[in-house]
Length: 109
Image (cartoon, rainbow, N blue to C red; front, side, top):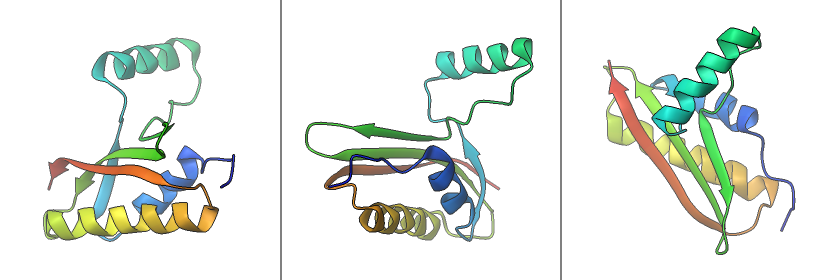
């Protein structure tokens, strides 16, 4: 098992490359996302990523992502491809057991 978790940016790029995905949304709770956006605007820094949430729990790694899907693609197919792409990346990176991969559709079309 690797002690190095995959980066959010790496998974972000991987997910955006999945056919049918046209947007990633913040996986942070709404209040945290609003505060981060306000801080980014006030400080002039680049927007915080936060579109992929990665957590190491007691029983394994958990990854959560919220996506927008192109209207002409089937949501179930896109979600399965995103799930499989994340699972393959985690397997290649040797992060150890995976507890959960959660793909939420935030928008279609």
